[in-house]
Image (cartoon, rainbow, N blue to C red; front, side, top):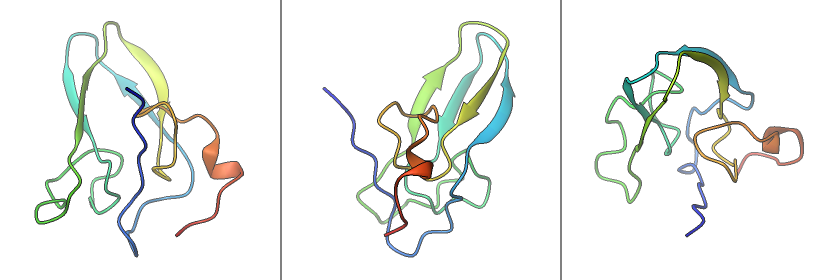
Length: 88
């Protein structure tokens, strides 16, 4: 099933990607609502909304671009959607 991620209206989500170094074997929680003050990671600010964080685990140490605009079709990774979409 494809996940459509849309940030909450008036969220503080960034428009561009977050380049981060992920550690292999570690679990992460990507902010899908756009409300977290720890972008791109979840800080539980989604409580009370219909959104939830996306938990994922990276298999190896790697630098990646995590989505900041929350419009990616490949969550949690940036797919360039910020270049062609406008904030809600």
